[in-house]
Length: 210
Image 1 (cartoon, rainbow, N blue to C red):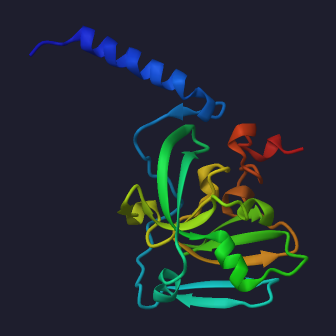
Image 2 (cartoon, rainbow, N blue to C red):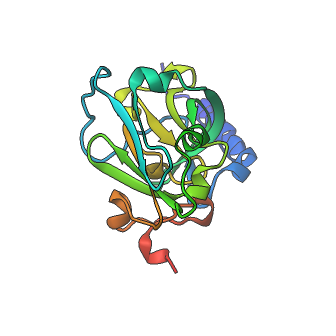
């Protein structure tokens, strides 16, 4: 079978038209992808659900430690959201299933001086976010994506999803939260990434911070 130039050009035209139609959903400096690239620090942790725990503490009224079964018994939500990676790709129309951040906040009741949250993951990874960002109704702890359980490379058994921030803030393999009265930079934030990470403001690197 010979090379079909007309078919290739037709596919390219179709893709350009699709990108143009979706431009309002693609932040500056991003390229649309149908794939789901795998990017993370370190190896994939080997986890045993029998000993897995989700621990929440810090400036809260009621610290909690949940087993896997206890976490899975919490009320569930489904969220449709786009994902934007600081490396330049955007994956649209993701459907996430899990537990809303607000559900956890309701359980622990943050104190009035809690302004930020440090998210900790198995594998010694951390990231940080303002509490008011996490309280958005599209933020959740997910274990399913587009109708299927997450794979280990994408954060199974639990990952945070924060659609309004670059994807490094959506930490994989989450094991707990610490509510704090001040802002404490996480792993990538200490290595030169922007502390806020808003893709629509193209907040990629710390040198951009005012």
